[in-house]
Image (cartoon, rainbow, N blue to C red; front, side):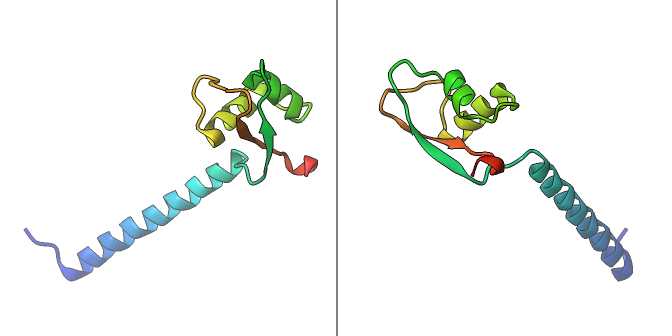
Length: 97
């Protein structure tokens, strides 16, 4: 059983439109998560933890857990593995820039 040319064109069009709609929704979801556009550099001091760095450098009303996760992601840090003297990037909210 073979599909006619018009059936193939219809199927291709439906798939193409579906992919475009999915890409639009995904891009909206990424924007809604507050993707980081600006960062500031911070040199890790002896005894620093990601939690304390996030509390000290984050907006007052922000969720510290989210900022810790963002710092880990931006700097490819796993499990809060910090070294004194290490230079890390910290997300900056637009209001702070």
